[in-house]
Length: 148
Image 1 (tube, helix red, strand yellow):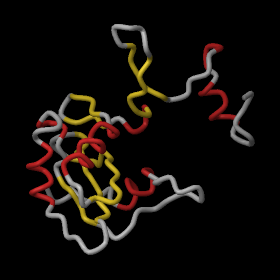
Image 2 (cartoon, rainbow, N blue to C red; image 1 turned 90 degrees about the vertical axis):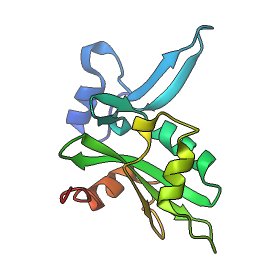
Image 3 (cartoon, rainbow, N blue to C red; image 1 turned 180 degrees about the horizontal axis):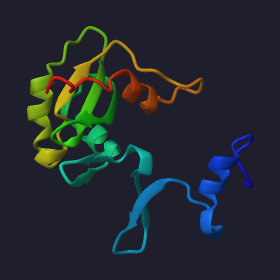
C-alpha cells in the first residue's frame, strides 16, 4: 500500500515518520506472540481507564446467549468522559433483559468495563460486506447520556 486513494491527509497521517500506522492495538505475550487487542479509534477512555470494545463484546456474547449481534462503543458522558455502551440485537423470539446481561457480565470482565447502558435494538448499521459500522452507531447515539 502506498496511499489512501484521494485522501492525502489520511495518507500523511498513516505514513508519518516513515512507518505505516495501521491503528491496530495489541500486545506481546510471554512467548513473544503478538495479540491483536482492538483498533485505536475503538478503545474507550472511561474514568481514566482504557477499555477494549472487543473485550467487552466478547464478554457480552459469553454472558448473553440470546445476543445475535453486539457492538460496544464509547459515548460522551459528563462524569466518565466516555461511557462504555452496548447495543444488542437479540436472537429472533427472545427478549434479553439489559440488567440481567450486566449482572451476568460480572463473571467475565472487570466491573469498570461493564457497559453503563445496554440498548436492545432491531438491527445495526453495516457496510456492504456486513461489517458493523461503529462510527454510525456512535453518531446516532451521541446524546444518550446528555441528561445524566
